[in-house]
Every structure is written in structure tokens, then in C-alpha cells.
Image (cartoon, rainbow over all chains, first blue to last red; front, top):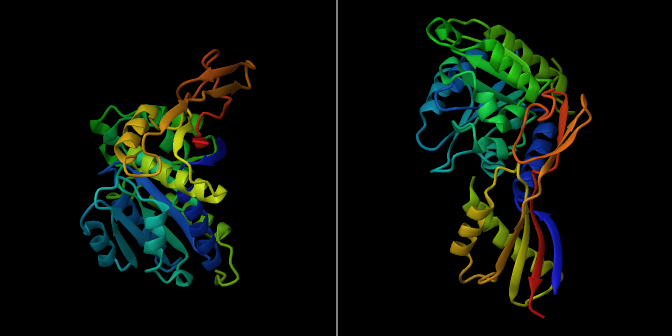
Amino acid sequence: MKIVAAKKILKVNDQLAAENRSQLDAAGVFAVNVVGSPGAGKTTLLEALFAQWKGRLRPAVIEGDIAGSIDAERMEKIGVPVVQINTDGACHLDANMVAAAGQELDLPTIDLLAIENVGNLVCTAGFDLGEHLRIVVLSTSEGDDKAVKYPAIFQGSHALVITKIDLLPHLNFDVARITADMKRLAPEAAVFQVSAIRGDGIPEVADWLAERCRKERRSENAVPR
Amino acid sequence: MHELSIAEALIDQVGQELDRVGQQGRVLRLELSIGRLSGVHGESVRFAFELLAPGTRVENAEIVIKEPKAVCHCHACEAQLEIDDLVIQCPRCTSSDISIEGGRELMLQSIEIED
């Protein structure tokens, strides 16, 4: 006897992600999933953005790493509410982990929640965390062919932030090439170039995210700004 | 990518489906649909399933995997071409004005149980 199921095998993550998104919406929190290779500059980018947002909006961050609390300590140092997730070997965050971390945060007091994913351009593409927006961080030393090699993660992102542009004079990195590849995969995506240590391009990214945060927060509890 | 956790999720899901329809019979066969663009490797799912199935309700079940292709619709040259891998431009005319349909599914299609 045949039982017709026609069910998605991984529907559990999608369901949890949808629940996460509802909870974030209800609390007026705008959530951003930050993905990129290990060493791309995700944490450094976030540190620079948080400095720009001081007094403008109330941020918080969920840090995802396989082990350790190095990134959480950096966030504590700059005074941003942080929860560290240790995946103990899992190479990506999933909606279940983010739901658990979210319970440690006082969501109604947060405007923008950054979720820094595990360093990984492959597996992070397949797992909706409940975010409103996904940004992929790619450093100049990683090469300008990565959108072609890892299309899923670039296609699923709303913005590409190219980091470490201060290294361009020492590299054969073609900014026009990666920008064109990104636009082909995700025509609506924004592309930014930054150097976090010099400050180049950081205000533009901060403003863009702050504007998206303002536009997309919807909640009766949200304090209008 | 994560074929072991996919196999685990699959075994759980079969149990849930059997409970949903109130059936207890031995599971003979599972039909899966794993799209060519899903990023999931069918043979690795099969391998992981064989590791995890013993001792469960799906012990010794046969796994049948269909791998649907995606279709690339080109708005420039009107081509509709089946593709095995994600493309960023039309395979025929290289226009990037394309949309890709299907090929990403990861589905349990049916469960066959002993009568």
C-alpha cells in the first residue's frame, strides 16, 4: 500500500524560521543574517557598524561559532548585548539554535539584531534563521570568482559587502567582476566596498541597514524614531 | 551537505507520516525527490540512511530517488532548457535575463508499506 506524503524533508527548519520571524516582527526587531567565509571580516564589520549606530538605534548580536567565545567577548567589549552560540561541530546556524539564543535577549528593547553565522559559504545558504535580510561578506583576499563558485549563498543575499579594500593594491581582485556576477545572481542586491580598519565605506553600509531597519520594523510595541 | 541529518529527518518524518495515517506495517520502499539544484547528494543520503535505518521502523526499506532537473527560462531568446547546475546566464544565448524554475526540492514523495 502506498502512502502519498509529498512533504519537504527539512520542513522543520522552515517552520521554526517562520516562527522566529513572527516573534521578531511582534517585538519590532529587524534581523540580519551575516554570512561569509572564516576571516572574511564579519565580526570586524559588525564592530564598525555598531560604532556608527550608537545613539541611532539599539543593536544586539547573536554570535555563531563552532567553539569558543572570542567574538562574543569582542561584542561585550564594545557594550553590545550578545549571546554566543557554540554549535559544537555544526557548520552553520539553524532556526532552532537561533530560537534558543533569542530567548536570552530582551527583544522589545532591540531595534536591529545581527546574527553572525558560522564562517561558511556553503551550508549557511540552506538554512533560513528567521532573518529579514541576509548579507554576504567577502574579503578581497578571497578572490573575485566566489559568486560563480558558490552561487547559492550569493543569490540568497540582499547585499554583498566587499571587505579589506585597503588590500586592493596588493591583489588581483577585480571589483567590477564580482559586482557584475552578484548583480546577475541577485539583481536587487546592494554591493558595498569597505575597509573597516580605515573606515572607508562603513557609513554607507550603516546608513543602508539603518534605513532598512526603520522601514521594515513593524510592531505596535516598537518605539517610533 | 548534511546528508546524515537529512537521513535522520527523513526517518523521523516517515514515522510521523505513518502515525498520521494510522499505519503500522513494515516499510518496503521510500520515494524521494532530490532536485539537481538542491545541493543534496542523493547517493550520500542513501548511504546515510543505510547507516541509520537498522533498529528503526524503516529498517531494510528500499530508497528510490528521483532527481528532477530545473528549467532555465530565458527572457531574451525564449529558450526553455533543462539544467543540472545553477547557471547565471542562458546556456544558449548567454543573456543574464533568466529565471530558474524547480530543481531545488528535497521531498519525501511516498511510503510503500506491506499490506
